[in-house]
Length: 79
Image (cartoon, rainbow, N blue to C red; front, side, top):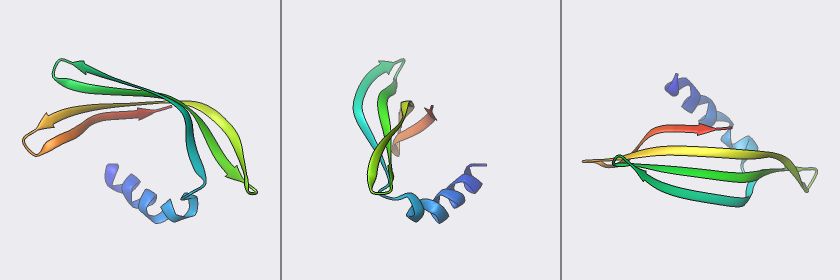
């Protein structure tokens, strides 16, 4: 569940803070039927033994909707 995932991330965030970087980011923003789609392609690097190492190519997407309370995430995906 979302609640379980957030609890896990909150408990372990300090273990990985400062050990990952997004590089060579290509960000596109599109308006689709009143929603905003943000797509990002990137290179993911991790810090191992004080050296930055390429880990993988990545793709992130976020779909947002403007509500009375402000912008809200409708969907997010990373691979």
